[in-house]
Image 1: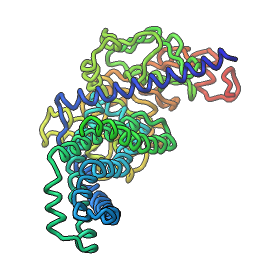
Image 2: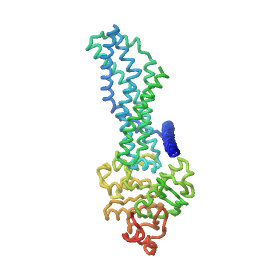
Image 3: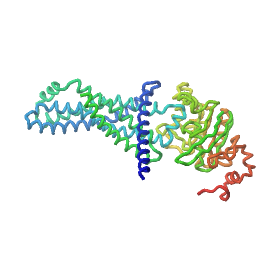
Image 4: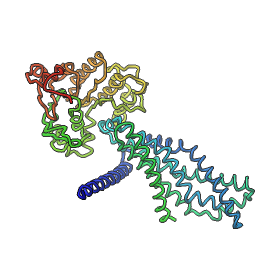
Length: 257
Length: 248
């Protein structure tokens, strides 16, 4: 009985190790294909359109309301200690250093990451990836590299847009609704926002972009056969990416800031 | 030339291919027949490197498939035309783009030539004027013909068909099989077709291999199979319910 238990645990552990190895190998292959020709520029542009442009509306909406709620909460808290003047820096630094990159990436993971997994998963199930291979073409160059590069390029831009719209949302609530002085709001932002804050946010966005493309493509590539397999892969991709973003965020924050 | 030696494969603890050995000479067209689930498609996937054998070797023109570098394997595959059972068409592309895809991606020919060659091959498979449609807008037979057109566009040295006529009506099936034969003869390709279309497939191939319980029971000419006294071969070719083959 003990032996059976140990065998079960052991084989489960080995299975997890194997999957981890596959996951790492997938990333190494993706990076190798991203750095060596031929690069499919048209597909990269198409994916930038899909990941970046098509996410713009949801990013703007999320950014606007995040900035608005930050201003509303922040103003109330700051007023208690008589520091309402710092509302601008509070909203801006919260967005630029933390909420912008994280929320923006979570939104992209939910919208574009899930679609990438579903698309690649269906291609796997319908043997379209096998068909690519049998034409002598490398599926990584068609399916993974464009998503990886598009994600790396799109996320920082989306994150910056998120931040700007969020700061504007904070302005709407803080200045227009709650009566804070407009000059104070923007001048204090100028006084307290540093380049390192912006750069740190960009580092986060780039690394989250890599995570989104890596996990989404991997899950799609290894979707099991059938509709169930594809839906399970999509769900798993969104959950795994979201958790990975939050965990990775802690480590990046501790190193960068 | 394709040579397979002592190929073995087990899936989920069950032996699917057991010591398979055979050879397909250049310009030869061979059919692999056998019961459903007997491992025909698995064998075909091993031949193109989509699945790895537990043991045994596969050689293309004397070179071991397992010893090939990624680039060599890609080069070999670019000389193959493979028709999947379900077509495996790219559903985000039109019929024209599906067929043109391998040519475009190789970048060896100009736009005008691509247009001419795609139109030509679509004419051959009876799909003239259907190039603008998406796979979801065409029938199963048309999808299979599109898959065939895509496999033929680069005029491959090896043609591999995995049950390409399953689910088609008898007339289209016969016309497709005839098309396979004429194409294989025209291109002087080495061909393997996995099929259940007995006896129609016998009329287009040089040899037939019957896969039974993981091994080839017989590899011979279609005429020899028709004359065979082996009860398993006879039952399978005639489609008799009674006989040594039993479905559980």
